[in-house]
Length: 241
Image 1 (cartoon, rainbow, N blue to C red):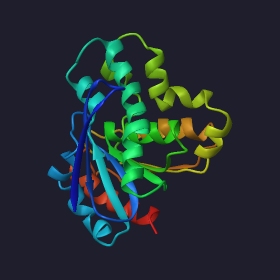
Image 2 (cartoon, one colour; image 1 turned 45 degrees about the vertical axis):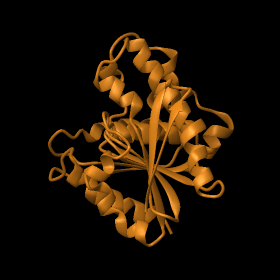
Image 3 (tube, one colour; image 1 turned 45 degrees about the horizontal axis):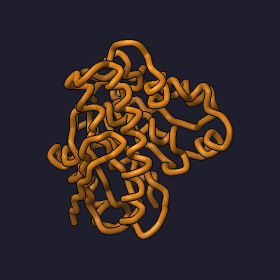
């Protein structure tokens, strides 16, 4: 069962699409790669590999456009604008996408964030920034310091959007909630992979006593969809009753 919804996001001042696969189960918000749209995960067969979990009613999967990632990839606007858009994108996730998921699910329930590459960055960011909305993250082949792709002077918008930067200052109830989250940082060490990115994120989390786990799948696994076809079903099966 596939449902598509589209609206104009006032926080980003651009349209965003949200697609759902499934009818029942724990919500999983699956972020696309950098330039991907809401249906990228279906075109690249990732939905097919988690279909048994969908069919069994264990998960409902949602995906939305990678609005900020697209702008970054296209060098849209100024560097300040692209950093602003990452902040606005995450705010749209929390204030627009999550409420749409809650309404579709007939009430609040834990949400798992997941994604690969820049999608892993987004999954980690929303889980760390909004731990009252997300209680687990599956981050595959992640790139967690995206400032080198954007360039330009570092801004407050990027600070609030980047977990490597805002985690050291995180305190209070948000930190306590985050310490109850389940965060997986998985990476291959084959072509185009850099497991050091996962360790950098793990160190930032560990410094705040946030439990996490780094899984290095080894040199046979490169930065590509077949790696994520194997990873995502395994981790979701572990996280979902």
